[in-house]
Length: 262
Ligand code: PGA
Image 1: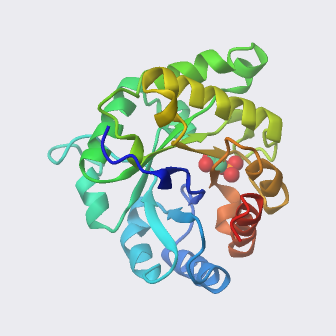
Image 2: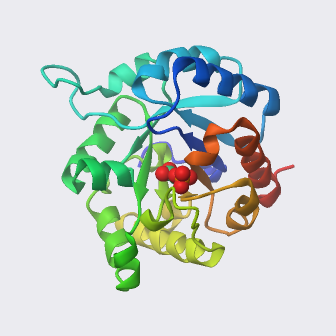
């Protein structure tokens, strides 16, 4: 395993803008974030705009604590793949991170484990840090299949050729995304522990203990503190609340406080 360091559990809060914001709105939001989150906060921060906003946002965040991430990527380097974007193009546009396997990609667009496994490897080969999303649907949780689903989503992508030092897992229960119904801190902790144990089966306990696992799904300023206090929750992947500068800044502050970073 290459380059595994003890920095890997550094808390990490990322905003997933999804298919939202015009260029003017994006610039305004970045301006608001720069006012509220200055200096060198003791955690990693990223924002993930749509493809068309990546380059202008990379310019807008220069000198701020925010890094840039994309919401998806294709696994080929270049060629006749109309509509797709390569890992090298993301790096060229200023990206450090890329989200892979978001539940909207899995369940709305129909992406499969095999495709996601290729995307993860291609993104890392280009030097990107991957945010790999996993999460069960409501009927899977209610049918007591959460662990089966999470285990499969881990097993079909991870292997010795995936570099854990450039990998964050995001646990995002599908029933909690955009619904206003977040997982309870205990539910999040239980799922995060399961994910960590599963990673230990693929790698080993020491390495699995170093992997950052974000929680995502209706994270707000009001619930972030409690969620982020859980021992296996290392940050948040925030959708709706990342579109409001004040709210997102408060989530970042709550994470810093919950992790005792001040
Ligand atoms: P939400 O989305 O915060 O709006 O629930 C989270 C996500 O999908 O990453």
